Length: 437
View 1 (cartoon, helix red, strand yellow):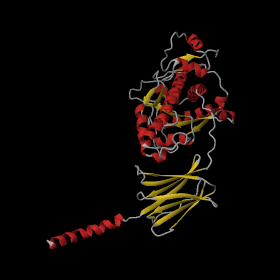
View 2: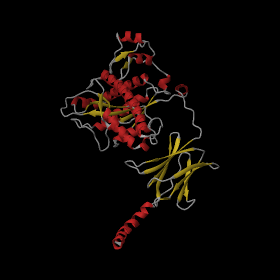
View 3: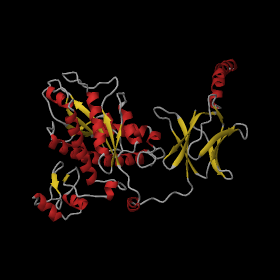
View 4: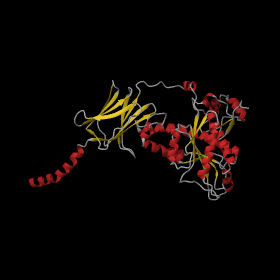
């Protein structure tokens, strides 16, 4: 019996020795980065595994101290350069078996910390956000409007580019070339409109990944994103312009991606962080943001489609819905305009014509202008210099009473101007606003 126990002990001993170091493994701080965000500074520490830590502030000079129990710096660790309120990062070992990281600050700041679990592209992370001790007062719409007005920003994306020529017409016209030409004309037309400013996503023949296109629009704080394309179909007989917005399915796919990578969604809704919210609250915040964005996209798309229908032929009389990746920004209203069918020989010829390109640009500008005068963002030149829109295109969820209130007219006068007896209006209906001549 004793021999059997000894044999078992000898068998288990190597296994115990192999497991012992893992049980005592230190937390390794593998990397760190500091970035200046909107209204706060963020420090992120990449960890080998979760661990216990304490964080506190010190004054004279201002600094934040982070003590990590049973931790050490990884062999490849490099202290990050300062950013925002952080002047520098240094570390030491106040006692054996612990690691102290000090954030030297240029001014006092209140730390808030949380730990992120591993995601698709990142491991365990300790995040420290540093904010001014006294928050700036939240500005009301009235106080914003009283300040210097800003222009609304329209991001213009010329489809395809670089090694991606897009569709090619019967005479060899490349989609990437005509979309860039129209985009440049559209930018000039928008810049010539008071209260509006254009940002070209690409202004040369380069390739940009689809996701990077709408990210550049978000970086520019765009109020609207327009992607320009030229459609193609095998038969070559289809003709006319079309306007698209993101489908519900596409919005759901993007929501899942953002929720899976909370750190990149930190500035999703006006600087509100999703990283420290539980799954339910994060999903609700994202749903609210996407719902408002899709509503604005629908309104903008209808205005542009109406303007294009006045200019020439449209392929579809209603705004189309599709799962285009380029339209997936959850907080920037986004539309895609198929300017014409490049596969149609007649339309290919028109797409090459500078005069036709200019007319297209003017039509899209008219639609965009009408949209923003219907729903001007607070604090903009357009919001401070309103004009009554000639018409209103009904969007989903709008009622006749809501439209009357938005334009500052009575419900009765709105009914009379449009020959409406009841209160029923349908999405896509065009209403004349009384008092506009």
